[in-house]
Image 1 (tube, helix red, strand yellow):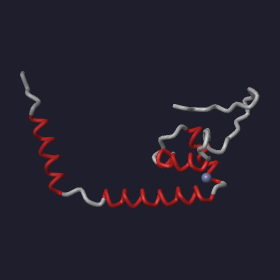
Image 2 (image 1 turned 135 degrees about the vertical axis):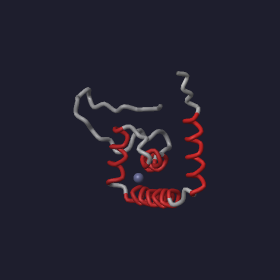
Image 3 (image 1 turned 180 degrees about the vertical axis):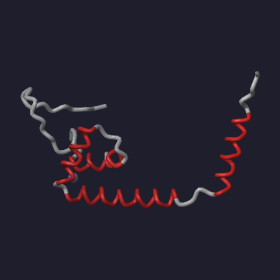
Image 4 (image 1 turned 90 degrees about the horizontal axis):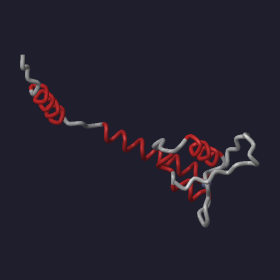
Amino acid sequence: MDKTERRVGGDDIRVVTPIPHATGSESDCEHAIGHLYEFLDSEMTADDEARMRAHMAHCAPCLAELSAEELVKSLVRRSCSEQAPESLHLRIRAQLSVTTTYVVDEG
Ligand SMILES: [Zn+2]
């Protein structure tokens, strides 16, 4: 974890810095795009997510990128959930019944 905490004079004022820690040659946008999937998958900390939102709020290219990825994600999700073949259902059910018959009553 390469978290860079920016504190403002030790005050308790919460400043939402647009996007976490742009380091070296990495621009804010590169960083935002690099963490796009973490954002979409809700794998960011609340702080990082807030900063991500703050960046997206005033960065049209990144917002467009996010929307595109969101669209792709929703399409993939839909096509994946479309078909769980009946044979799979039956096989799982068969497995479950096998497992339950293992319970032996030893009186
Ligand atoms: Zn950007």
